[in-house]
Length: 320
Image 1: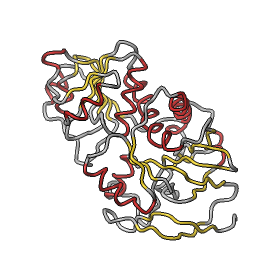
Image 2: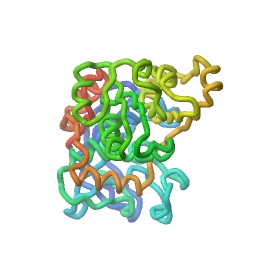
Image 3: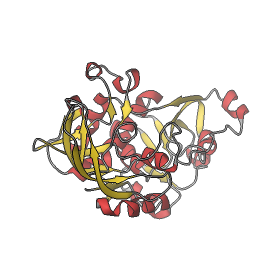
């Protein structure tokens, strides 16, 4: 076995409780390699785990799967699903092969160091780690969701939760793709910012009454908006459910609307390593403007406070 290692980490000891920053000891699997963490994004999935939304997980946990830092002095990103090496070059690898999300069954990146299989490392062209931690997961998520929903140039697309970490970066990808994007946020101030990204920002989901229905909905919020966003879909349109931020049951309030309009509903689980690499290239090129607020490891509970309050645009990024 590999030698045991000690380093500081933010540990979730109880669901819904503050993290404890302390020294931990890990014994990584043979052949796994260390990454010195320089930036890690706080994903919506992390918040669901923190709340206790995944019943198969038990504290203590070191969360964090949007990891960027140094390996052997070289800047790298870490593909967040631990998959067998033979799956790396297979499209759809994160979905078709056995996998474990970093930070759940495997210790994650809310730490000074993380150990991962070497085939998960993706070389970065620069060391602006917060930029990648803010944007890559959101862009990769939207690349995958767009493929699931058949979104392409000219598609009219509604994105809910558009000012969050996935939303604010994902809408930029859809705009680059040539889609006509309607970005929903409840905040007029955030709407003004979203407009600057080349999309149509809306603060009400009945916008379709004056602007027409959309071809697709990328639902990032889930239970709280899905029925309203569904009304904005044209007959035969596609709704892709990416997130359900509160963990409430997702219920269809008007089944007749769903049936008579022949709405297609899809789930979008994550992204594969090829989509991850494509997102890294977009972030590196400057095509995606990153939105984030940085916090030290000791400030992680402040980061969660701000995420839960909805005050942030984009990602909270931890910089150990």
